[in-house]
Amino acid sequence: MSEALTAETITITGHGGDEIEAYLAVPTGSTAHGSVVVIHHMPGYDSATKEIVRKFAANGYAALCPNLYWRDAPGASPDDAAAAGRANGGVPDDRLVGDVAGAAAHLKSLAGANGKVGVIGYCSGGRQTVLSACSIQVDAAVDCYGAFVINEPPAGYTMKPLVDLLPNLSSPLLGLFGADDTFPSPEETAVLAAELAKAGKNYESHTYEGAGHAFFAVDRPSYRPESATDGWQRVFSFFGTHLTAGS
Amino acid sequence: MCTYVTQKIAIEGSGKGATGWFSVSQATVYVDHPVHAQQEHTLNIDFLNPSIGPSARVGLELTEEAALALIDAIRAALDSAPAGLAAAAH
Image (cartoon, rainbow over all chains, first blue to last red):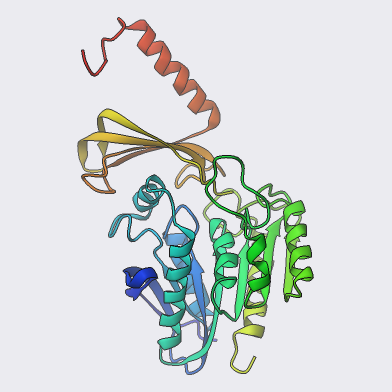
């Protein structure tokens, strides 16, 4: 694989027909690629997330990250936009689903797309990945340490658990978690596995010893290179299985 | 974890941001992942003026200990001055 790619900032049509910013990376010379929607974490549509988008393209996937805070702060720096989004009450679930659907549609429209679309998200984006895969048709989903999928958040939190939506899961799901994480805790992710088994869903997961929350984040002290390296291998194996033509 | 709870208050005063001084009208206070501090979580404060735009922001990312010390320091500073000296109506 050449790892050659083209990356650019584009405009896509998101929830409610809104035009929103998104970051796209496409493998060079691709003739039949799978696609991935990347959901950024709560701190924003930042450089670290765009690096993840490029990593997918370097590995043969077209990847697209919608800027979930575009409506709150068009053109602002990622940290200012995240602060504005938080001050406005955060990203509503229905808007998130609409933006992911718009991103998936855009990816499917690209030349060389094989029609398969996966979703991946980190931290708050992990929960939003499960929400998306339970709300729209996708072909694979990866939840990286999303909290409040199963457990009720502490009093005062606005997010709702997704337990009731799990029977609607439209694709295979991969969950990657840290054993030292408390949100989600290993107890919570065990319940997730049980609920998905009860619903007859295709689910696999791995919980890394010695890792806590955000072990994929290369620019944070939570980074655990051994877990992250293994996790990336699992992500690419999973997407390789489910996002190739004919899978 | 990403937290979803934000304390949001109306404030009156000024702050110095990336492009200079501006009036602040709102503050948000929350515990979540920082952008810059090398901690998994910090107590974050944003002093904002949404009417100017999202870049009208002074951000702070503090350890829990620092945040609690700041509360004490603010109270001590106010207590050491004549009551009402910095009040809006003064």
